[in-house]
Length: 137
Image (tube, rainbow, N blue to C red):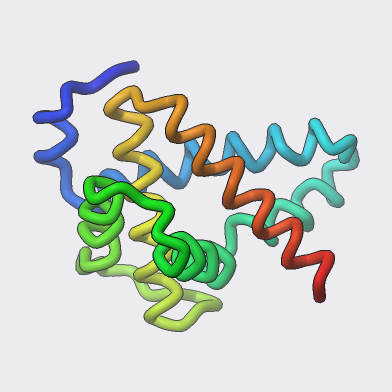
């Protein structure tokens, strides 16, 4: 599905994050299957490393510090980060929850505007960063 940039620009941060959450989850699942993980309980446990609000916030800190985002990507991250949600973070700080919402909004915007090469590149970098961090710890 492709959305005109103008249409995506009209979506609020939470709508973009809603889409981005699902898209990122698909990439995480594919990453785990390609790595050879096939047991459902193990897949679920490992997927949580990538999709937790804390880890998504850490990834955003890294992306921002390394200046890996375009100006537009930062705009949509901030749109998601600054969104006022009626739900509260269950197992994350307010900051981590807002940063992960921003991360997901950026992913959703890239997907909806059909910037799939950039989306794949960015998600690949994020997944690799999480994997490398896990090995260091």
